[in-house]
Amino acid sequence: MAIDIEVMENPLNLSIDDLFIMALRVNKKRGFLFVSKLLGKHLPLLPAQSLLTSGLLAIEYYEQITGESVKEKDPILNGCFSEDPLEIEEAYSRLSSLRLDLPGDPLVIGFAETATSLGHAFFDCIGQAEYIHTTREEINGYKPLLNFKEEHSHAVNQFCYIDEHRIRNDKPIVLIDDEMTTGKTSLNIIRDIHSKFPREQYAVVSILDWRSDENREQFRQLERELGVKIHTTSLLSGHISFSGETIGEAAYDYEPKPREAELHIERFNIESLFTQTPYVNEKDSIPYIKETGRFGISRNDKEDVDASCAKAADYLKQNRIKKKTLCLGTGEMMYLPMKIASLMGDGVLYHSTTRSPILPFEKEGYAIQNGFTFENPEDDAVVHYVYNIPEGEYDELFMFFEKEVSEDALQEIKQLAKDRGIGQLNVVMFSSMERRDDDGQDNG
Image (cartoon, rainbow, N blue to C red; front, side, top):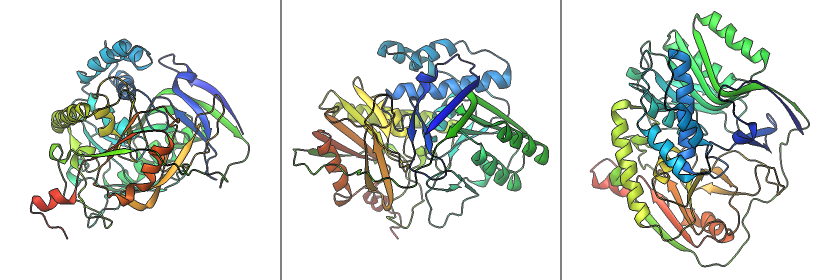
């Protein structure tokens, strides 16, 4: 396989090597993957650096829309790519106080699953915005207002469970994605939104934009067809060409080696700090929580979300017993674990599990050095993957689940921890059936 890259726009003068590294997808529709060094999905990083990336996107978009300059831009940029923890901390402090007021008070929508945290942290920087992320979850008794396809994805169907009052208006809509390769997903959701809740202004904001000339013309065609403006912003844009065969199946083993090793397990229930919603699925009837943004949050919620994350981080930090700590989000549950991890002290790295199968290969310069698979403990019909956990790298793993998970459902994760030489597994949960019962709500 070969990828040729031609850079067209690079507004921050970034190095490609700072942004991504390549890997092979196990997907007949698209055979390659730009593995982001900034996203906190497949590669571990300091969590504040991923939050700073969202800040850079928000600043770049704000400056393009308003024509004004943001004085915090340079220190946030420097902190994002720094190796100095103090410089990163200072940049993150500047970002945390940033508030960019955009015309029209937009609705920000992050794409699941990869851009749920990217979108949420982008929203954090904007004034009177609202935020929601798309999802692949199917909710009992709740018909999604938006339903569209992510055609190249391993899991195609996307839903948006947004209350009508948040979208039946003329506010600009800002779509957040980590990467546009063709832009079809963005066009699909814009068509769906506009058929139900038309407006004049849309935007698509991404770290990378690889649309071809033909793809870009499709955006202009949709603008003419709908009579709208679609603004695009990215940190790097250009053209790519791919040659070689895609991989539909791979004959390799994701399973951890059977190994008897000592593993200490603790459970941390932080549900008292977060808000249960009335929404459940057919699998477990355990409520989803509000603070993820899956059902929508507004600027008025930001202070409460920040406070809840700070309290959770303080509690978990007190229970850290090792120096080298990995915090692992799960699937769409990325932002809250990332935010919490950023406040848990030194020696904490973060990334997340994914639904995407990628070919692991131990070779210098390749993005995915190792990979493991397990049934999602919250839904055993969904397979999750996790990548780049070197053997002996971490002493302690904090694994974050939106919902309570059983001991039996954790067996594969326990084996993974043993295989990687992790002696302490901390399971962190945001919602449980017990609290639903205690609150007097119907258990169904």
